[in-house]
Image (cartoon, rainbow, N blue to C red; front, side, top):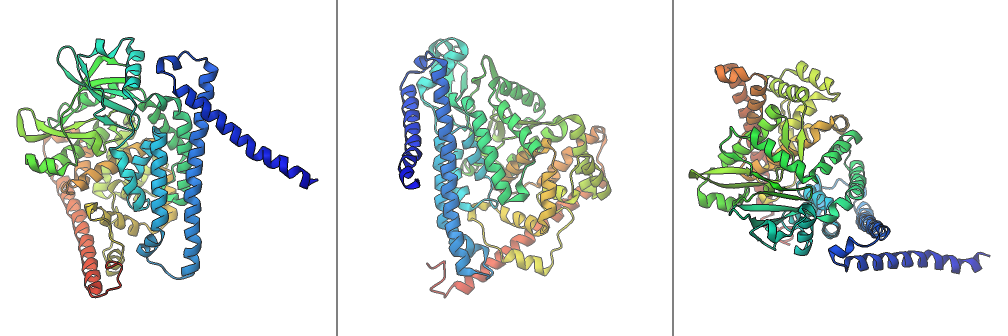
Length: 559
């Protein structure tokens, strides 16, 4: 019986998917061949069919890429275990062994993210900032998505503008550049001039982003759950994830972004060195945002900083102080302050001075006053090292292990790392990061060496309240910018000063609290000393490796 049935069953098993894919491909291509105006004229059921097939493609593309990566990694893992069995393998040797699998996986992932666009581009940008957490091959590949993002055609741009304002580009702008000056994960920016001569930047949302936001977030959820299984200490609890996705959806509303810009500008008026572009209200819609055009350089453009003679320390201090005030004083935090969203330019009345310009105000973390004041108080007690108060605040938030949470805020051990010979030996034997890492590896290793109890770390991360995750994102990104600018500003001191001023604003105007000032300086020097010692251990390790392998013709470096 089965001998007779296998042929028709095989035919159905192969034929149905082939016919399904063929029909879907033909439907989507036929729809895309129509002009944007004609696409709006087709019956709704046809448009829904197209979106259905496209959604299936996105899920299938993600699944196929994930399957290839898992299969490739599993293949290498199988032979790795056979080769080394129960041997202790150095992490650097392990990474070198898996390098081909990591490299292929990174390139597959990059092509998939570029193909799908939208929220997947943002996912790739997230991966590019996870150095030390994901393999370096993925970080290097995803860095391309910080600048090189696929854009939409000028015809689509014209269509979005006409749909938003009911008029053509020529009737709204004196001039409008057809090529975008920048392209991001959710939108692209065009340079234009208003009829009164004002130069503006026009931000256009990609039409497909809205269509596939829900399915893309679902795939993002699957990915983060999978990664949470691989790296449990980075698992996000469901409530926090729901809060983050809610903020992502708000990022798609450009009317909301315009309001964010105005609110941020109002909060930043006291800081002369920090600037937010103005909004052209009459040319703002859900899919279009028109704002002041900014000539400037990315904040990590070290060549431009050197040419203008600007002070990197002052730039980093302005960014960190602005962020600290957003967190502790205003409770309204820019949650995406990566280098592409922060420009620097000459100050109008003093070109020798540098002004920092905040761009892309779609993603914000809003903190209620109760949380903001508790968070400020938490930082004050970190300065005073009042463990009972720290535990009391963490208990009110249902955060477990207050000491680990304090370490997470500081990005170094809160309770003081014992710099004994064993620790320095372990750090010195760790693999070297890239030369352009800017000295961030010592701190990363310090955290890893300080928290060997992964169970406690996982419990703490799982207990974090929803409001804190986007704030953490902002803290991590701003710290990376500080590192790129030479790590010359003590982030802890800047954050602590802002937190204390939020709690006691009257003390700030009445005079200096010398006890707190001495405590801050002591902790700043303590943090600096730890960094120096770890860097010294790494340099010593490098010298030992250099001299020990200098005459070795078969060393990996020679090869």
